[in-house]
Length: 450
Image 1 (tube, rainbow, N blue to C red):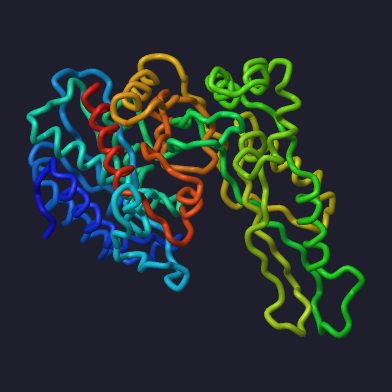
Image 2: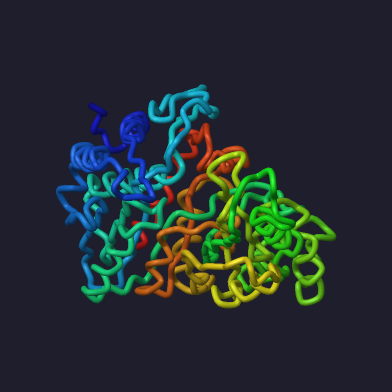
């Protein structure tokens, strides 16, 4: 059993590692998700965080999601901290260390916990729990209600967080601030800017899947037609690749560069500070600076899965491709689908919208909610860090909360290297111990301001 000391860093790390060892893997087919690890996780939380469970009200939503309420001393609009319990599957052979062993590798500042979920998203979830447990032990009570909303199937776009939002909506809860996972503290993401930046998502891109289908009569592969279904499908995919969506600077990206302009090296300081003049050129340059910069200035589309004939010597009667599209703020499912049809330009290729959601509304990067986040960054994380808005490139449970709040933000309070960010949803996911412990400080500061 992990130690119960609420302030000892070693005890906090022990609790974190114990929870990382529970393989709460979600599957897109819910019938294939093993419920036992989720039950084990619930039981472990109650055992490891007795102070929290003694003060906060807890309810289970949608089978395995958790909603906690920490009653404040007033009826002011609450704070909602969002995280998710589930993790993505692993290919164990690709990992240098067992993905659910939570091994502690290295020493000193380099000591890191290697485990699936170390960052996405048990890192945030357990840091939240640690912060609450510490504050409860200190006798702290928030001024306004605090809700902890932990979905169980975020990785599969499941119903956990949606049902939590439905519960809060029925009760008339209108949060003053919702904070979910999102951008991290990073270095060097923007060329010419050396100062660490806390990238707080004020919006996230929409997400949709289009299914492209080409059909033919089929037959033996020894006598193929002039344009088989596979060739027609490949031509459609190639057209999408050769005609990407146009680039543009969306308002949150414009705000990002306005914020960091004073910290950029000349002449980029002038370039970033005068986007009315330089914006069109920057929008064309950014795609050449890497995938992240490309995704900040355009809607992206990529074929992620292909299927054809059941055998090597058989013509495919149906050839299909799933195209994953992430919509930049300002685009819509309808406008994107119409453009794909124009680009593919083949009436014999069927285009079906499988799953789709428009980009989220944009939350303000001024006002009380924003100041609370920026103040928590300054107080809870060490070093000179510039807090800046940006568009979150991936999707999260936060999009469901925009139904009940106009102040929904996405930030993971960990200072991550590029290689650590690249390990998300890949092998060798890990987080440095010192970085994770500082993240607890961020949540403590945010909670104290609630």
